[in-house]
Every structure is written in C-alpha cells, then in structure tokens.
Length: 385
Image 1 (cartoon, helix red, strand yellow):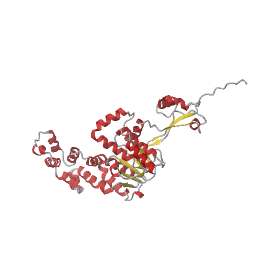
Image 2 (tube, rainbow, N blue to C red):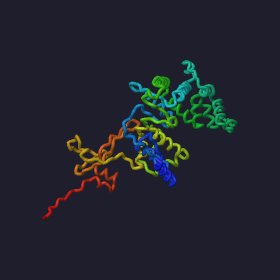
Image 3 (cartoon, rainbow, N blue to C red):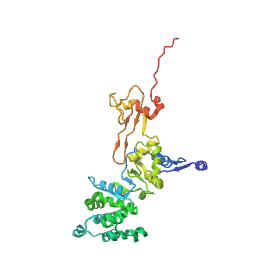
Image 4 (cartoon, one colour):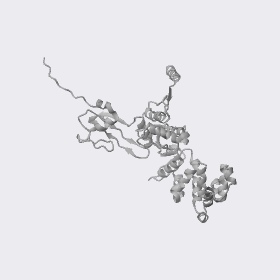
C-alpha cells in the first residue's frame, strides 16, 4: 500500500496523475478517458477502473438510468416509457415536484385562447405564468423590460420600432416565449417546447406520467433525469441520451477543434457534462451514436481478431459477406485469422449487429499490420540424407 502511494506521488511530481475509480471497470474508464483526451486535450491523467466486468457491450441491468442534457429529453423519455404496453414504472431523479409538471400544465393553459380558458375554467396557478395571462401587449413588454432591467427599453416605447411592434401583436403565451428566448432561460424554453410539441395531449400525458411515477428508485424500471441531477450518483446501467454535443461521422481531430471554437466558453462545460454522464455507469454503458463517433477518433472500432473457424461455424463453409456497409466482398477461407466487428447496442434502441471483415476492409483498418492475421504458407522441401 505504501509503495503504491509513493508511486502515485512520484508520478504526480512528474506531472502525471492517476484517477482511480472502483465504481466501474476498465472499459467504461476507457470511454471517460477518451473524452478527456480527445475533447479536452487532457493526456496527463489516466482514468483507472476497478477489476469488475462491464462496459458498452455488457448486458443492461434494471433499472435503466436514462441521463440527458436537457429536461426536454427527460420529458420525452417519460412520455415514451409511460406509454409502453404495459406502462413502465418511472422515477424522476430529484423528484417529480422538482421537475415542474404543474408549470408545464400552466404553460399549456396559457397557450389556449382566452375564451377556451374561460369556457373550460382553466385556472393558471403558477404565479409567474399567471402574470403573462394578465399582462399583454404594452404591459407584457413593460414587465419584460423590468425583468431584464433594460433602462433604454423602459423609456423608449415608440410603436414604429419593429421589436416593440412584436409585443403589440403577441400576448400571453407568445409573450412568454419571447421572454424565455430573450433572457435565455433554457428550462423555460424546454417546457414551452414540450407544450408546442404535444399541444392538446399535454393534460393526458402529464396525468399518465404522474400515474407511472414511483417514489423509490428500487421500484422503478427506468430512472430519468438530467446529468446535473445525477452528479454524485451511480447506476448499474446508464443510457446516454443523444442530446449532448452532437459529434458527426466521420469525425476528425480538426473537426473537434472547430467545434470547440464554435462552442466558445461553453465547450468545457459541454464536454464535462458528457464525461459525468458516462462515469455514472457501474456495469453497463449504452452509448449514443454521437458518443460512438467520438471513440472512432481514438481508433476504437470494436474489432477483435478470431480464428477463421469461428466465422465459418454453422455455415457449412458457405460464403460469409463482409459486414462493412457498402462492401459486398466475401471472406477468403485461405487465411487462418479473421477480424470481427463486435455487436453493439446503442442508447436509442438501435443496434450494430457486427460481423466479419473481408481482407480489403481489414487492410483499411490495420494497414501494414494486415499480414499478421494471415497464416504463412509452409513450403515442403525434401532433405537428402
């Protein structure tokens, strides 16, 4: 123990750091380290996992934790899980009340025409949302100017001004939407998008989510929440949503550098959020397609070398087609080893079935190392005694 500690101190003095975690095994640790290396340029730290099995290809264990970047995605997951047959039991990380279903309902009420609200007796309870029902046009603008403390706007109210005219034409729900965009309130914008996306189904969906929600995590089939809410927590299985920074395919280091420039000051935060989401998993990590694209930058294609006999099992040595998309070549049985792409399940439910690579596609991935998987021909020579 003392020697291990002294070794860490020596590496620390040389600018190298170990980051040990007994929450997950080496495969999940590798994904986290790749984010640090490729996205943040942190190469002096090594994220170490424990000895336990698990990783991106492990079998999922219930309950599944679906971690998202935004509350909008959490709501979509809740709608999907509660709409299954039979309905899934869900638990919102941090609590249902904190998620704000009542505010979503009030925003939906605000989106209804005034005569409809009156006819159906749709009373808005949220005090903030109620202000937008009562203040419209000029008063909505005045309320907005006071909220953002815009002194010039408070005194310059010429109706010819194009920005001001929007407030004359938009009231209630549209005024609230304008406000949310102006002050860049992501949570409020997300709730408005929920209402716009589901419209008249909102009351029914909210009721369904409430009926499927359970108070204890151990009773749930699905744990839903944002990565902010999941900080400090850990789960057997984590599904990383596809609403984090989008990484296209094919991706290169130069593209990631351009993305960091485009993200500006938020780049550090965005990569940190993705890192936190990945490192909440203990045994199984279901990655998004975007995260899988990121791993290709580090050269991870989920390939392994097997005996050719494995590829021909149960096929009576029939032709086996290469699994690479767009390739129609068949495997050549004259070689002793073959490269296999491992199957991979993603967080959105899609799957990469994997398969075997032909000699030409193997050359693309392994280059000059390709001959190593072939069996050298044995030349027989007669020795004269």
